[in-house]
Amino acid sequence: MHSFDFIVIGAGMAGASAAYNLAPHGRVLVLERESQPGYHSTGRSAALFTECYGSAGIRALTVASRAFYQAPPSGFSDVPLVKRRGCLYPARHDQLAALEAQYKESSRFVGNLKRLDAAAMRAMVPVLRDGYFAAGFLEPDAADIDVAALLQAYLRGMRQHGGQLINDVTIKAITYKQGQWVVDLETESVAAPVIINATGAWADETAHLAGVAPLGLVPKRRTAVTFDVPEPSAIEQWPAVIVEAGETFYFKPDAGRILASPADETPSGPCDAQPEEIDVATVMDRVAQATIFAPKRLAAKWAGLRSFVSDKMIVAGFDPKAEGFFWLAGHGGYGIQTAPAMGRAVGALARGEALPSDLIDGGVTAADLSPARAGLRTA
Image 1 (spheres, helix red, strand yellow):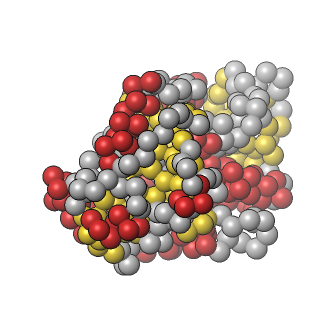
Image 2: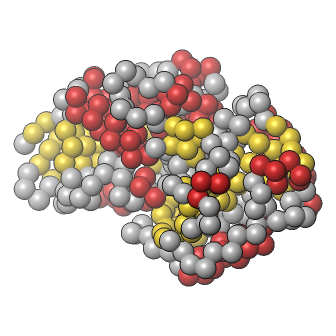
Image 3: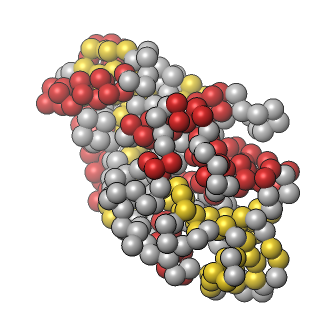
């Protein structure tokens, strides 16, 4: 039986960033059941870095991730991890109160938000339907994230520090024996005193396999489509557009096409999520109402799962009743944009250390992330 200091189950963004930050401090093994890392939620993310999205805790983690995205460690990636996009938050007349509340809350974290009237928004994104939106604001520094480059850089960096990744694994059993978590695979067993459950929508199932009480995670399906536009070059400089007041839908330029989503959150069991026609029809109807786009067909459509706990905050910490069992789950739609900060947080907490000082200074505490916090269903 091969022994490690940390076994990370799941090679999506959560598991990869955790493994990267742990590998310099011990022997790390990452286990992935799919043939390639990032097959599920990571590979299906719209991947926008925005400090105006999520709860105060999520925004603090996002703010703490910005420096890494803008200036990653030397040699980490051969390509830039982010490209400035900007993000526009428009609202209809009936959404103005919600828009004002969002603007005030977002201003706590972002100092250069710009209020815009309807004419200014249409000048920026000419396809917005005249009269549909009343006002909005712009987050100038929101950025597209190169998810594939980020994921591969984390895994490459983990390997450079001696970490190992095994794809296509089937876990038969997880048991705790004499201070070690033993993971039985099809052909061998591996063990470590710390096991990190980074299995996304399957995190409660992984916990059950280990005899650990579930958190009560709820995976929720989110749908996205892409469609062609007459002049691809004309849209390249547009910001993303998020109708966040009520979270109605969003769209943004994506490789010469428009990517759009109805921002659906339909509860689902853990699965290889597929788009439902009603959700595809919903987003296209909302696009038609709010813009002058008239696509005749879709280029692509897909769905992914975003998993939440009751308070919609990420869970990262040791289970209070299962020694050495570390939860890394409930990322919702925030896992990519918070990955640098969360990776460092896990790298510290899984080794029994305090959170990095910049996270603490930003208002993040270990108690905020802990699976033992109030309101979660760890029994």
